[in-house]
Image (cartoon, rainbow, N blue to C red):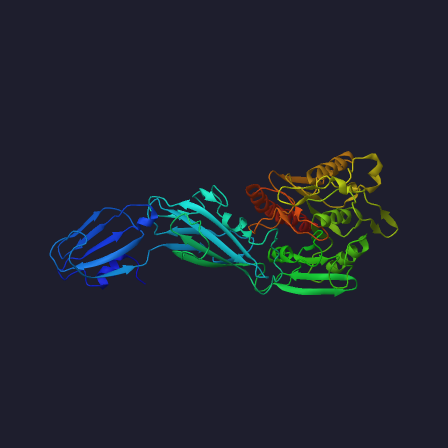
Length: 502
């Protein structure tokens, strides 16, 4: 492979034959600069270089006249070489929750460039992001070091091109459905200017295609259709036993697997559990039967590759309400993560054996519509602190294991921080210190695994308008990155380390 201009000259016979070579480097005036020239002369006895500028393209001219002829000189022929831009991404194939290192070299010093990311989801919907950067004096760019000066984000954000991806369709939310067989493909393009034109009008100077996986080659997915339980079980490679997790999503319904598969890659046996709008389960959620979730917990614990005696539950939104109820009433639950949930039963009654907990009433008239046309329901639910609704508040003091509350302070769907604080106060009043809260300023309702496209509003089941989830990009991205590592540490501590000391 030709590594430098000097190798090109040597291959063309520019050394050792006594014939000087003249070649000039021109900067495209469309880039906003002046015309520049760099003249090199090579003979048997000397090398002379006069640098008049740097450039983005090379024009080689060969002259038969002695010495260094002035540009353009007496050339017999010329050869144009492509720009020596290089874009590297390490690793090019990685798990979806892993960061990558993006660098560019061979740029003109201090050149403004554009980096653009393009992704297509399983349905063919296109997501794009772009950011503008300035190369340093050596013509290099490193996203771990250099700040974006404009575009979809500003500042030093090594993974900004990933979490700032925006769908071309309004109110779309990326949900990876096929987690086992296909990655998410992302193309990174490098342009040698502030590229604000329509995509495709100008070819990029360099490109890289990346793979973002939600599973590993040896991960096993087992469809679950046993008794009433419906879902998918993800098992890491090896004999185990592995700590077991139940993964509960919220009001989206159906079977959603992307978080469960990523957790399984990290060493957990994870059952992604559907509880409505899937297979033969109810189409709509009308009542929460906690015995269904108990059946799922027993099924998971009965698997020979699952560590005994207890499991963890990771849950979000409506699922977090159910997850907290599981922690309170089910002896199988040893550790619980509740992401932006409530501390009481809302909307639908919860039933467990002879116990029925009626919901706190909701107030549809409190819904608001944002300027973007999305529904804000932060104040939709009745207040669990109201004396009239105390029968609906979950008895968190009965939980057998620790509870980690993760909340976004900019959640526009639930008043989730206040709910978590009420639950922690309740634990303290009963002399319990088994609860902890991680609160993230700037983060909204949908706290997901890191580095995926952020979603502050999207269509949601049963609503006539999109749902406003809340969150601002930088705060949301930072919260997802930090909380994901805290979730992994929490379950390893309370499902693995604590068991090894028994």
